[in-house]
Length: 385
Ligand SMILES: *Cc1c(COP(=O)(O)O)cnc(C)c1O
Image (cartoon, rainbow, N blue to C red; front, side, top):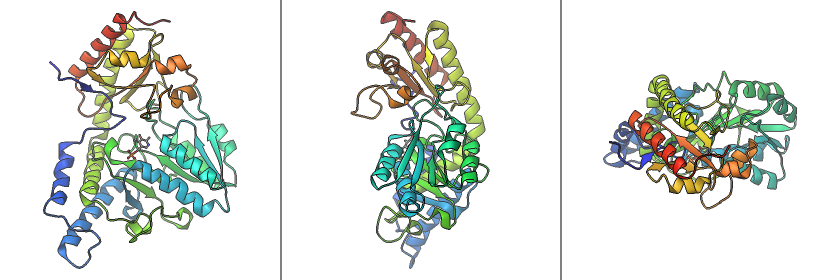
């Protein structure tokens, strides 16, 4: 027997790993010091926690420890990268390139950059959700200060070609930022091999706590950016405000676990998702997969149920915690802009479900989910081709 509702929304957030909580506890209790207090042991032990976590995060992406800056999450890191870089470099190079399927926080930060007087190119994606590299190479000019392309898409799971994008940016002299909230700790990322200059990371997508993240920023004058917060100059002056040692220790521990278990976790999730996919497609051959079938994170399945309404389907599968292809951004209803960008009709987009599996998903849960979904679809009259 499985316990319902079954959590299948790992792209929205992940449950915290107990080992992460263990790493956090001391900093929520006895080790309560302010890492900025340099005159006593309470401060030192809190600062030591930040040092350890910085090393653990850096270790996942092959960066220097001093290139990691803690933030409140990936939203803040994305804002810092886009607004901060364009504020400094936009005078000389007033052009930013990003992609239509980025997370809302990148798109909104890009809009803000536009308001500040810069030009923004929003690259389209191909029907498989990936950008066209020739189109990127054409868009990036000597006027382009920054290119921002996410590593793994949060809705359809597709993995953009990081190394190829990095090579184009380097050749054209543009900085390369990636929103890696869904990729960090899950797929291999190497900031040097991929020419990544800035990267955004989130704690709660990797079995760590909510409210913490990091910006990787390559050392050097060319990545100078304007801080978005005035204050005491913490995090090298990039992000003022007292750091949260417990949250940061959790981020670090979560990163270390991801690195240690990356290969086996990927294999296990691939098997689990294959099991779900084959059960679903056997019963419902008219399902439509959204996003490239190869270049995708193995823990994500986004499928349209032709002829059905996703919200109605959701209402009939209350034992499964999944998300629909509509209203992904909270109160905003209507079809997902990501599914529209890959060419889905409004009806197809609204019939989509995003199913995300992760560290704590079991085979039994997958079997239950498949049976529940197939049962609900059949009860609703089946799929229309
Ligand atoms: C979750 C997510 C974010 C936002 O991260 P927070 O840490 O919640 O601010 C940004 N981008 C992507 C791709 C995400 O999945």
